[in-house]
Image (tube, rainbow, N blue to C red):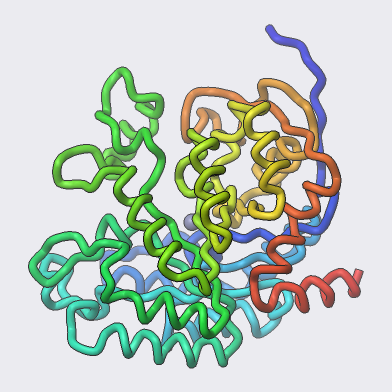
Length: 369
Ligand SMILES: [Zn+2]
């Protein structure tokens, strides 16, 4: 029965760089993946250039100047992805590469995975060098790094295993940013029971749970990441999803204080930020130079508008998603009404400063308008 002001913010107030998108995954049409080789291969072929065109029209409408695709892959996958996005829209998409740890190895036999073959790290560094020369902006790690990549003996590979050091060093040397998804929401590491604040979601997706002795602790995963960040000061790290700790912004703030080469982006976390609007606003203002915008999209117009509403208004108690039931937790959010100078930094200026290739793109895109 609550009756409070509602603002329908139809587009972003300033040009936006969406730091976290998955065009390869989300623009694809539903497809039967039961046949064919690996799931990844057959899915990769189906994103149409029409779907990309339609998404670029939505970007124009919403004032999103550039999206950073996190689906680049490496080698021939990267070439396919570059062709998909860059044939017509090179100015609208920067691309981050990904490492294929499993390669042609067998799913249930880690000893056969590429990452456990001799020379894997050296080959990856060489691929990164070639990828940088072809115009990519950085390297994205998925949450599998820490929760799925395994050593030959079957144990989980750790994020701070020194064997990966040449990769971090190469990213620093080549000026490639590292966007890394470490751990997941805190609730996913808790038992799936009546006390879990995201029970509805975990009940729908029990495979998203990392609760149990077979999984590392949330805090240990983040601690390993921070050791890497400390050890490689020449490398720029962006911890995805507010370092997967938006539930505790004072700790994230301390990490940012201690690590000048660490940054965060907010993709898929307005639900978290918006349930603590005073704390979130203070955090965003204090760390305005360290936080970037992201969506984990491509998202619909309705979802994008909720982001602008969150950042640009003081609206109270509104849904953070257009879904019939809230996808992440059964609560609503409040706008943080950021001042223009902070909004500009979060929306585009930080990405312009930190992500290679974004500045030129933004300049060309805004000049066209
Ligand atoms: Zn993502």
